[in-house]
Length: 252
Image 1 (cartoon, rainbow, N blue to C red):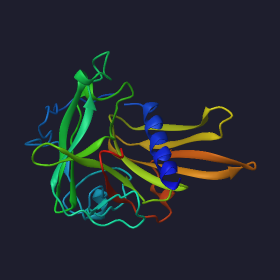
Image 2 (spheres, helix red, strand yellow; image 1 turned 180 degrees about the vertical axis):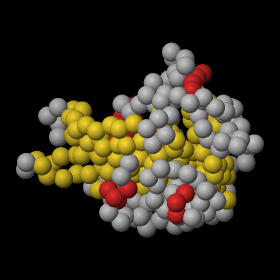
Image 3 (cartoon, one colour; image 1 turned 120 degrees about the vertical axis):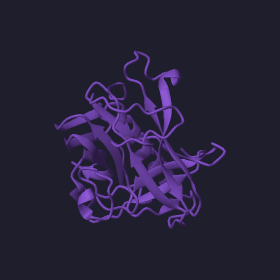
């Protein structure tokens, strides 16, 4: 039951991203099944803390609003609430879409690009500057589908950055590129009369940003309500630690 609620939280995150926008700043075009950052002076990489703010001095991965995250990857197991470190290696890839095509959701307009590596269980994420066609109509590009592959190009699993197994109050973090400074603020009910509320409080800076999602069950006006909050303010974490987790492909 707990795990079903946790998967529901992930599903709502996906729904939220479906309503979430991305537009422009053309630069280097990522190539299919090749590292988009190889030889790219516009790519940034993290060698110490994957996802760490450049102001921390521990990484040169420049992400606005990011908190320090350990590069250690953990294995997510259905039956466990304490997770063991992953010790393997592989290549990180992400699915991107060509928004210049009207049928951008079709498989033929999706490309897989390398965005880093995992070495002995340590995540080394490399970010690139997307070309215009890889940004949505709002000038944004989200690194959401992050997969780990072995040397035979077989999928090992999917990576998620979150605070662990707590289905009633879970925090996720995602990387979002914005071609401009932009502010989104809104509160809305996606499913009227179903006690599901979305709260948006986002201030993107031009470049890569860390977007935080808090999926929480609570009681509002005496009724159990699911609230999904999206924000670029890291204080929403309230000191909770984010970790990289590896999900088996059969789960997600």
